[in-house]
Image (cartoon, rainbow, N blue to C red):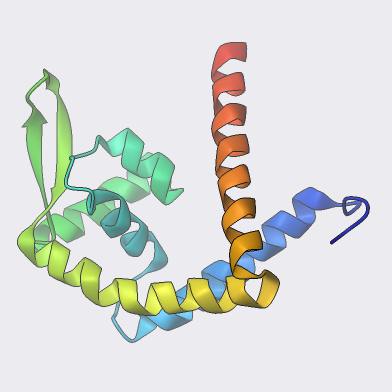
Amino acid sequence: MLSEPPHDLPRLLSSAERLMTRRLAAALEDEHCSVEEWRVLALLSDSRGHTMSDIASYALMPAPSLTKLVDRMVSAALVYRRKDPGDGRRVLVYLSARGRTRHRAVSVPAQRVHEQVLGELFGVQELADGLARLEFLLERGSEQVRAER
């Protein structure tokens, strides 16, 4: 364990994200799936339906690029759009049966990459604890940014 934090933590985290994304892209290539498509499938796999802005935030994509991706996914019958029953002005995106099948197929190589990369970095319990702490800090940070606006 480090006795003091690295001097350039933002650069280190960005480099780790880029490495993970490159490995994930390589693993998903055989399935003809982009990292962005995988992120959309992963979010929608909860069957709750999500707004385009929620999906854009989760997939780390600008809205115009996400719209093009979701349009392609609709054309491929992987997802569908429905009006939000609680607010008719909003549209929610859902995973179709075909999309669920695709999600299961691409989740196997994605999970393999996650386990490989994270296994190289941490022990199982240390990893679980660190990820839980990171998720908590990211959520708290998002709340602070919203409060400052």
